[in-house]
Length: 281
Image (cartoon, rainbow, N blue to C red; front, side, top):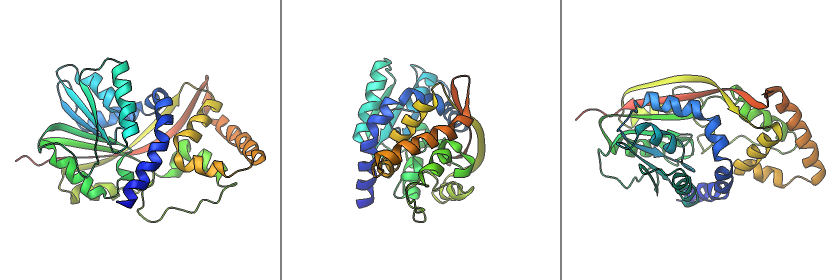
């Protein structure tokens, strides 16, 4: 329970920044959303659950796909994220998407409610991933599919390590405790796949998605996005002096320049897409 509170507190502080940058984040992670749609076999008229929806993605992108005959429900443990998701849905006039505060390991839905369940970069932060996956399978209809996206190794993702390598020269960054909530908790192939199988999923499958993270922004704007959306990074930067911060920013922008082209930032990226099916009854 204490771990739950700490994670919610951290993400609550990040929620305004995720809402501020939501369109850029949606653009950057669009290939992952498409991969989840494919592996969860989502098409028109489906009823879909998005767990750890944040400020409403990929729920709203999926709502576009399933159309008025379908329905998407996004849940998140952080009330501020859910409020941001509702605002985004209202602005875009979605009638087939709704959002609710809920924990992944205690979903407030009857069994066999959804045709598909997805989660993009959520399961890494769940206190008990296997309990959460069991819940996600419980609310799936028999034969329905679950698909989750997690980061592959940090060194394969300059979106993360280009900034972190510079920051580590200024702030001591000890590695996280084994299996603690962290962006790269399931970077090792097979680790999340085993949890999915242990939770009771059938026909489990893992694939490596290689793609490009693209955003139509400057390196300065990307640095602002990265420094704001991560609570851990904000905490590290907060302890630096003004002089240190100025030098760090100079080094970060210089390092990021290698990933710019045509007024965009472009990073090679690798993500694991892990999926399975609920056994037919």
